[in-house]
Length: 125
Image (cartoon, rainbow, N blue to C red; front, top):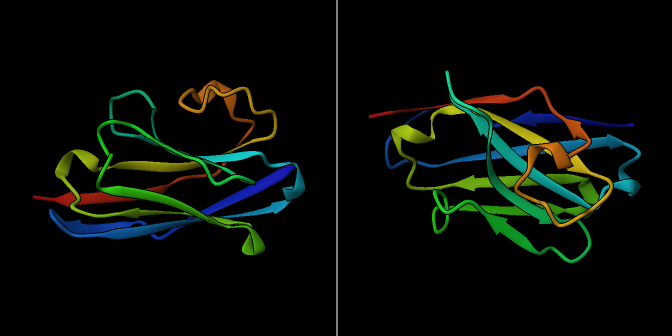
């Protein structure tokens, strides 16, 4: 089992920045990739970004490219999401996810095995 705990959410004005963190514990040696998803009220959960655990390859949704950066600290078993130039449409509950069987479908929520509880990000315009 892998446990994930997100932190760093909050209220920020449009154009501002936030950094989310996701700390993994448990069988962290089994993690091959981690990702961030988000879900706005009344909408489906959507992919934000992903990073492979060993190689550090990164993938982003088109809506956040150039504004968000995902990174990891393997020693701390933590993945980060640096969010800059935030927009009101970025308001959502942000979830961290971990994958232990990498099949390349980094964008699909169904491909991830473990999830955190989520952290709320609210961007005021």
